Length: 217
Image (tube, rainbow, N blue to C red; front, side, top):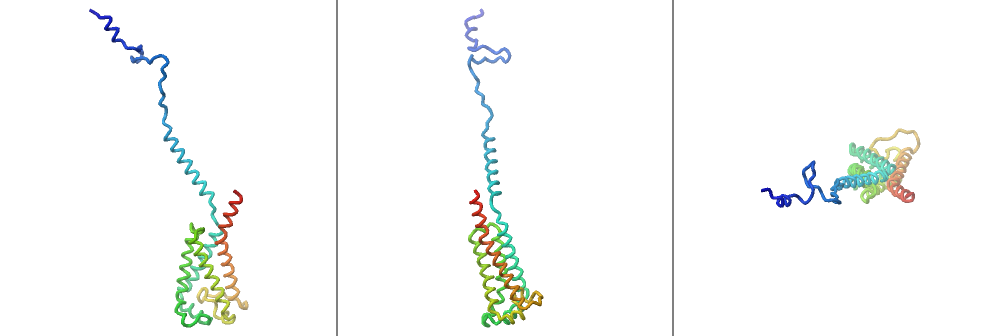
């Protein structure tokens, strides 16, 4: 015989949804919306903002264009001069001996002048890049400046007549043809003066750029 009580007990506590056949939630129940997980999107946005900030910092960094151009010109001078001396050492030594400034017992050291100039030129390659504002780059530029100043002082010790006849030896035995009196000394001094100005630009130009940027910010 059909048991009405057992049938009533088997009925679920919640009414059944006719469409799905599943119990319906009680009145007032609100299902929690898991929603989309935004952590990945927020992480991507954070990385994008960091990269954008880095790009802005790189773009805002000064380029020190004039200082780097000055270093390039100085570097080329040392490399060309050193290569000329290395390619014809005997001619360079003979010219210096004609100047009668360097003692005879030091004549053997003259063969190292050309390689030393090449080394200075190659070291200046580092000063063109990130080392321009660092102690190493400044040290190389100062050594280069000291070399130009020493050469200028050396030429001042050479007799003008001898210097005009033999040449300065800056490019070994290569000389600029000119009918001007005392042209060798004039061209050597003019070249060295320009090189010294380029050294000053390379040394103090970046600091002046940084100072102007701080004053405008």
